[in-house]
Length: 183
Image (cartoon, rainbow, N blue to C red; front, side, top):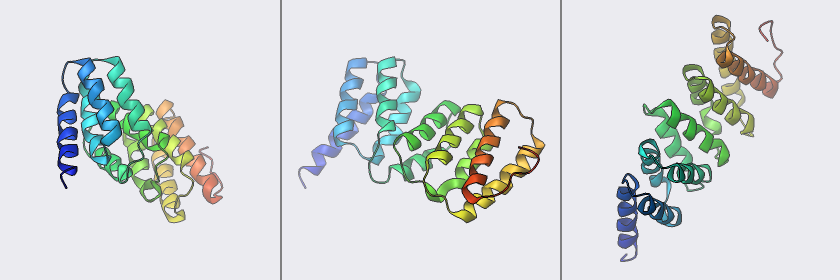
């Protein structure tokens, strides 16, 4: 029990250091988080990413998030997505999910919603998740197809619309659905 308390205090101190102006101290804190951190480190890392002015800190945080393998990391990242975060952070969260190879098979609808309401970059990250997730439940895929078909028919085919169409085509391939005239 005495070992847990210092580790917890060490992480809390590291989290507090993340938003400071001292680049070296922040990088040192990131070293400690990388060794001792868990899924609870994700939010402080994203908060630091949003605030930092240091490119090395930004790159290091993104690199850590892209390799996150902690238990409950997918749950924490999905929770952050549901919060109102900036489009830039949303793209980082989405890219972290697919880069880390996290299993998010039960959340296809969330990714489709983010692709629809986000910008082209968010939609692209969602496309990458859809393409790289090995298993999607068929019922969820069919529901996503219906939603995308409804939305794409009412939208223009700008860059965002083209990416949405790519998601639709990929999902159709997954369930063997024939495309209609919109593709």
